[in-house]
Length: 173
Image 1 (spheres, rainbow, N blue to C red):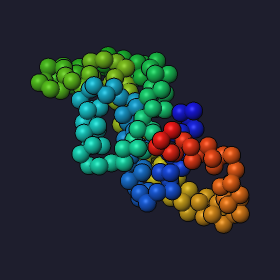
Image 2 (image 1 turned 90 degrees about the vertical axis):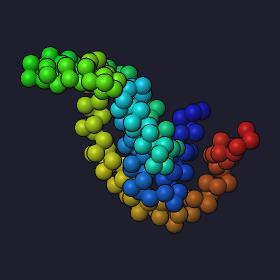
Image 3 (image 1 turned 30 degrees about the vertical axis):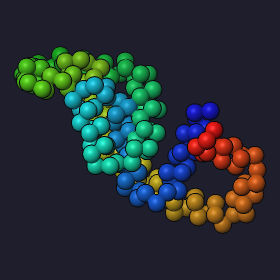
């Protein structure tokens, strides 16, 4: 049931008045928060950005959960990336500084999985933002217009699928 609710929320977000840039930002920050542990400095900083700058919270939460689940499955690769960075002799001074600096030790860079996840999330946040913004624009430009022009949209409103959608979307169920 929660998968159907998530799809309904995603469709509502895509059809809302929220800009494609704002939705792309919300989706990419949700991806970042899903990959990194929330109780690290970088997780709390991104969470503060989401709350302080009024980023679309529904979009952030909607993308947080699948990427959180993916991060659990990707712990092995994250660990390998983190271990290779932590064992690099050239970076030993950086890790020592980050671990001993007041406040910066909260980043968790001494933990290989956290380090690998943070690196992957940081590398993916920009491309994911650009891709999700482009996909939202493409959806709004092509799919939603074609869907509205089809008579199938009116037929769907009378179907059992629409009744389920209305029931899920109702605040009183």
